[in-house]
Image 1 (cartoon, rainbow, N blue to C red):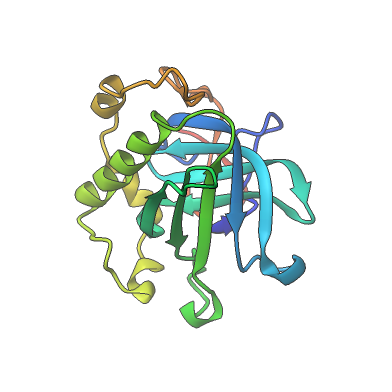
Image 2: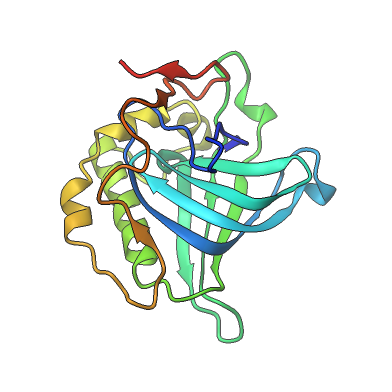
Length: 207
């Protein structure tokens, strides 16, 4: 994960080199724990989830303290599960390993638990795409869901960019009750800024 990744003024995440955004879902509620500087470390916010071939990014409608957005590399997500409780809304829960800077030790960073709650509309488009995308990323990166935390946090999350997503998106089922937006064209033009690393460095122009 990475707290408060770089965003454009319209709220779209600043993409990495070779990153392709595939869909977005507005009107979700997002829960995450172990966030520094927040009450009890827990954050609950409403906003938008963006999914790409590299990561998912939650962007809050309104900041919660210093929390604005949360970035989760797909290769670092594990124990993901779709839940259909009787008395509450459908949701996806899981855990995500931290993105550990190269000069720091893994023990200084905690694994986060997250939940994506669908409180506005159905999830028949989002859920299959979410699980298919994560499965494809793991397949093409040759990593299973049972990797150790230390190994997970040292993998380069940007290697997921090699995952082919075009065919999956062309054959995606679209649930009319699900307001998920599928990007048939990239929402960020190729001429815009691109990031090259998860480390805190200035955004670079794409080449």
